[in-house]
Image (tube, rainbow, N blue to C red; front, side, top):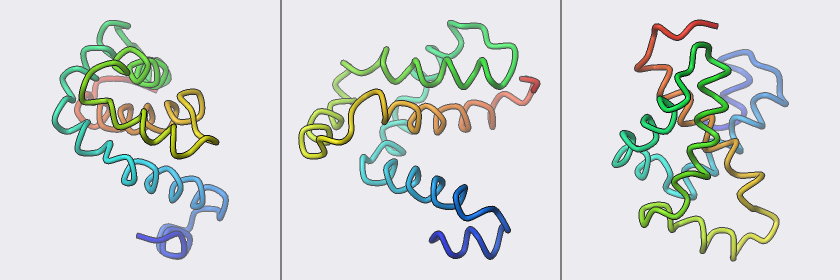
Length: 114
């Protein structure tokens, strides 16, 4: 789905559509979706360690999981990416990846409240 479709089909503001598009592109470019699918237990275990009660707790724990798991062999993709994209670093990439983890976690943990 491109940004135009996001705006037209879903009816969201252009800035939100742009952020969604950029985030999805980053996840795709990094291959993070596949990494997550293969190792989601690790990401979920990091989130679970914080015993989240609300969705925001999940978000914070999910973002933190990126840093915690950064030195795992399956997370090595970030080194080449950061080297080739000097404007990107852990601080401005982890939130996007963490939100992806958050969304996946919340989809499987419907008991978490707002």
